[in-house]
Amino acid sequence: MHHFHYQSGELYCENVPVRKIAAKVGTPFYLYSAGTLTHHYRVFNAAFAEFPHIVCFAVKANANLSILRLFARLGAGADIVSGGELYRALAAGVDPGKIVYSGVGKKPEEIKAALKANILLFNLESSQELEEINRIAGRLKLKARVALRINPDIDAQTHPYISTGLKKNKFGIDIEQALDDYCRARDLPHLDVVGVACHIGSQITQVSPFVDALERLKELIDRLRALDIQIRYLDLGGGLGIQYHDEAPPHPDEYGQQLLERLKGLKCTLILEPGRVLVGNAGILVTKVLYTKPGGAKHFIIVDAGMNDLARPSLYGSYHGLWPVVEGAHPQVKASIVGPICESGDFLAKDRLMPAFAPGEMVAVMSAGAYGFSMSSNYNARPRVPEILVQDQDFYVIRKRETYRQLIWGESIPDFLKS
Image 1 (tube, helix red, strand yellow):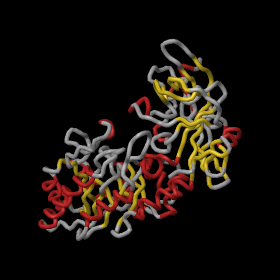
Image 2 (cartoon, one colour):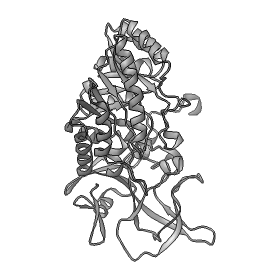
Image 3 (tube, helix red, strand yellow):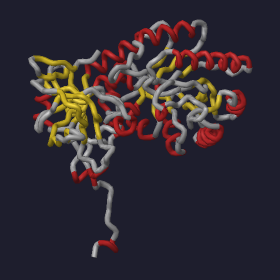
């Protein structure tokens, strides 16, 4: 469910016309619905109400402070993968006791900051990382709570770039090697081994890969407990998909029911790391048509948003729905929506049947709340776009549009180039 709908032929976000926001902030911009974000979190959280659990929102999906703050007020923690995401989560008021830190390349200064913040746990991804975190924790006279992120060799049946649970992927520790590493971690003086973790991929539209991973982790937990390694947390990661086009992902209730059936009797706290499923359909990218280039071979609709604003179509070939901000008697045309970036891969939609948008019209690129702004860049020296949050009949600029001056912040010209 989301709160984007038409009233009298005009697209609204909750009770605010999108055209009104565009008149105030210009295009392009990201637009989020607080009502949708709240609803999605509550539905997901309720699906696991029968079992002790913590929902840690995957910050990489959307790192805006206001989004993080909204989830934190609802009771969520944070799944982070960098020192910057830790800084953002803490700045937004996320309880450090609900922060889990994954990622294959944690730097010493990032580990130190997370230890000082007293986060819930680190998900360790390599044997060498065990030694490094133990060393840093020892210098600080602290003990680091850790889980090992297991690579269960499960095919998540998703795009290869966002599959993370196969042996050929860079993530996690081979499940066959895990027992040795757990015993090693147990014997390191500054580690407190408390959990088992995994994350098998993103935009997963079936429950079966999650179930397969859970069964493998349960077997591992039994073997660890037999070695007197007492596991208190099971982190199943995130990855539940959403509908962009014709996918039929499971509802969180179905996802929760199938996992809960297999968690009975397992005495631990479940950690879940949803990202896309909470924010994906809660946000859109609004762009304006600049020009059209009709032709015999191709029909191009050129808009003011590009691959630097929304990378997913260029990076993954991803589908995003296209809605007119103001409905009209548009004929259908097979076209590509492209941006102003100097790359042939700069497109938001390619060779699709769509309304024949005309210059000056605005287009809503749907399901852009996840991995939209968070993956955006300044390529071609383009300022990043603003982010807007709607709550009922009010809207708030939660990130201003960047200025040209901000594009060169931090840069300097050395003296030898000034004369």
